[in-house]
Image (tube, rainbow, N blue to C red; front, side, top):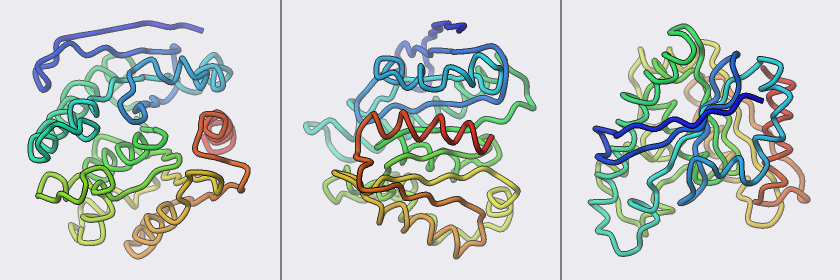
Amino acid sequence: MHRELRSWFSPSLQKEMPVAVYGHYGFALLLIPTAAADYLEYERFQLIDSIRPHIESGKVKVFSVDSINNESWMNKSMDPRHKAIRHQQWNDYIYNEVVPFIRTMTSHETPIVVSGASFGALHSANLFFKRPDLIHGFIAMSGVYHLTEYTDGYLDDDVYFNSPGHYLPNLHDHHVLEQMRSNRPIHILSGSGAYEDPHAARGLAGVLYNKGIWYELDIWGSDKTHDWPTWREMLPHYLETRF
């Protein structure tokens, strides 16, 4: 399997930001880490190995980026307002730097689907909902979709507009909604075992249903806990059966 590590100094974040690239061909799968993890997390926990057949067959080309959650939402000593500002800079990094990088490594027409587990699921969904003109769809595994779960209840405009459970029910922009409705892959997955929150997945699905946006909600059994064995089973299954 082809593996390549790239890096550049991000104008949005004012720091060096690495990206791991796996494969040669296929649609682009952008992986967002969990919690405060880094761009090699999915490799360390064997999720990349679990989808290796789809990478090697040319179905998918994977791009795994760093989070900066430890400089924002996961930083307990940081002022909540500064957390929100820093996260907005990360959004800018994804939209203005990572997306163009993916296009140079694939093509302008190549679909970009974003995926992540746990906190990465929230970010994945949010990246799509905010810019469906850039992101083609998402696979969200074991997420909660109210950002206030991570802000100790703090809510300002930057928190609100990065919290799908807050802003999506109030989104009425016809053009944006039509982009979301236009045959985009939206997969909301959750287990029912320890530390999973299937009600959060159902809640997000309910919002999409009310907006007339296609989605697939898939709640797995009580043996599927909030942990890597679950995600190593979910992601290859969806790449095999839905793409």
